[in-house]
Amino acid sequence: MQYAQITGWGKCVPPAVLSNADLMTFMDTSDEWISSRTGIQERRVCHCNFSDMAIVAAQRALAAANLAASEIDLILLGSLTMDSLCPNTASIVQNAIGAHNAASIDINSACTGFLYGLHIGTNLIKTGAHSKVLVIGGEFISHYMDWARRDVAVLFGDACGAVVIEASPEPTGLLACKIGCEMDTTSAIQITNLGSAYSRLDKDFVFNGWNFEGQEVFKRAIKAMAFACGEVLAQTGLHIDDVNIMVPHQANRRILDALAKRLGIPEHKVMVNVHKYGNTSAGTIPVALTEALEEERIKPGDYVLMATFGAGLTWGAGLVKWGERVTPLATSDADLPPCEQTGLEILAPHIARYKARQEE
Picture 1: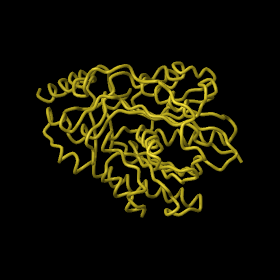
Picture 2 (picture 1 turned 30 degrees about the vertical axis):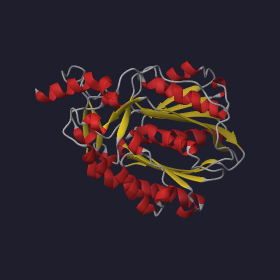
Picture 3 (picture 1 turned 45 degrees about the vertical axis):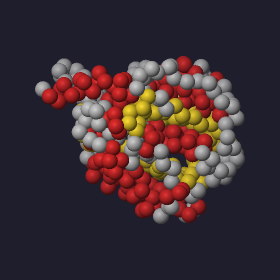
Picture 4 (picture 1 turned 90 degrees about the horizontal axis):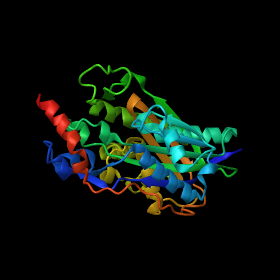
């Protein structure tokens, strides 16, 4: 049987920081209000295009695997904040890194985009259709934020991560995955004025609105992720005690704590970085996975449990058995263009537009 081992990993986190104190300069909020409800202390703001982050993360993952981009035969890019819909953004990344032998596909399932891509790529490798796949997940969510909405604006940030998966006879990589969608809650997380359902003749089209039903999301997310985790453990015949580390979607510290309690996994086994970056949607798991490796929290042969949920409400979980290598084979000097602005300075024009609209 053929498996799909994770051989490379990388992240790209923009340098510009937007702290809770920064939010307090234009929003009726406080560090205590944000931290106590979400666990978030700061988030990052991208100063360039989303594809720039994806390109850097991809190049770092390729270096870690010691692969040339030309060896990749498929790119799967999970995001809802693409550079463009036509052409797809995966093809923009493909061209930039020189992956001329790859097919390129965008995946939009919101925050679940990376795990969905890992699931698809793994199964394509198992069938023999592909042998070396680049899976990317990330978001440029600050570009679509309603900066007059305290309940959502404090939650999100920009970042991107990537992994390389390769065909292997060893029973490693994503061993089991369960994905799904609770279609009766499509409006629980919704960005309005985005897509062909919204008229371009509407004078407010340039403003993105948000529907965000926090309590409903909280309840559904924990239930769905716990169910999916149980399913993948059952598929592999493992118990939660066999899991060495859980790398969940970083949406909210309260959700992470509630999920860990429901699963019965101790706090020290849960990878948490939501305090540094906020919710970076499809970027949370690959960024957290990369940081878990950088912090030496993943050992050879470890079982890594991933869990995620997003708009739709899409949800899923995956169980990865790690291979023998936990350090990069090489490094890349790829980086974003220089940034001379703070997060607050980058967002100032967007914040002004939304505040003006709110005051009309």
